[in-house]
Image 1 (cartoon, rainbow, N blue to C red):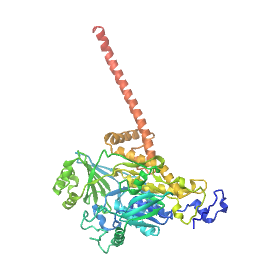
Image 2: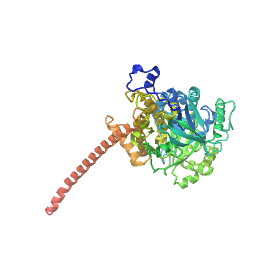
Image 3: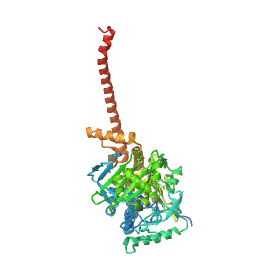
Image 4: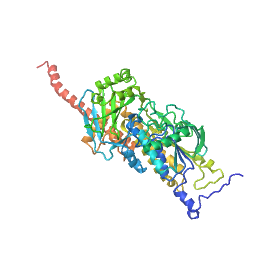
Length: 571
């Protein structure tokens, strides 16, 4: 018949509770089903975090096919993926998640930079001795490492579905959602498909070009079959009590769209026009044996074209040529081998002999890619999550029904690039995303203590918004300043350097250095730099006023005798 309702009074003493009920007061029961939309580094790190907490029935939906194994030969191909730098923030988070060693095994440590400024043939080399040296890894190789961590340690708790997209989200009264998933319809879903890749590369969806004796290829074969099965599945709607949106800030992020459109949800996406757009192409650079392979190489032209190069574990440099989209003269040269060779000879002679004609031919065929535009999840302390507080049962009560899943408390949260999208110039994107994951973990740990008597895991979601929304906004606003040119980027760095050297006890290092410090939150950095800037402006204003006063005084002392002589007729 109807549902059977049983309640335990909130006024009951703890001694009257059963052992299971007392356990729930310390470790609230996890949701019966969790779906993470987005199987990139952020989504997979989230799945690992939840599995380490003992959660089960966690699904990850990823629209792209699985990458090759982390030790596959395909990673020698620079077209497989762009490079990312894992800084101190990211390394601390990955260590918390128990997978740092696996990731570091596939990274290349970078200890400094070598820069060529326009018109200067002699580079400047800067080597740093940081506690956490930047570790460079291909983005999809990082994904592969996290997939292997799940496969080997958490396969009973986590299932990753490739080739599927979340196409629709409908919120349920209890805070969960009905999610509709479908096979990825984008014919170009695999950004590094056989059509664009080196013919010698191993493609996991077809196994074309693969070494069948390679262990990584065997794993890829198994995942390829699973991927093919997912691609044949019809659209399916499932109920999820907990939804994590980890698919970035692109329009295809259905969870973000649903939260942004829901008037009952505090999330309101703030997107900025790109005032300094760039498009890019990648090119492999094979350095000779006498060049260092632990540096970030950088060269720029007088008209603003930049070549940024990061090393890989295999010793190859992957260069990214960044061009203004309105620079038609340069863009035209990027469409042919002859044009590219002439362009490298003229503008990047230090690298031209290390780039083969075959690589230039592939570069010419490659489509131009774009950088993300700045965006963050606005809405203050309600910005990053969705729950239905009015639906929560009376605190301390236990609700049991035949169809309990329909009344189960639920919620959704955005994480990673979904809440703070920045350009990848300073390696803050993936590292801040990993930091999001461990902060959500901390909030889930604190959930039982957020109310005097017991608590539900859903209490962690508003706590996550409270702790992370201001940081997401600060990260994007500071990063936009880095993208603004001389007045908002170069001049502040100069001022910070001068004042920090003169009075390190009063002024902090420049903003870029501060953003890399894992012990400082982004909102704290923003507050401190506003303070530094105010004091700097005050000192500069006082110095300018004093200089003006001194100049005026000198002019008066010089002019007074002259005026006096004129007044007396020159006598």
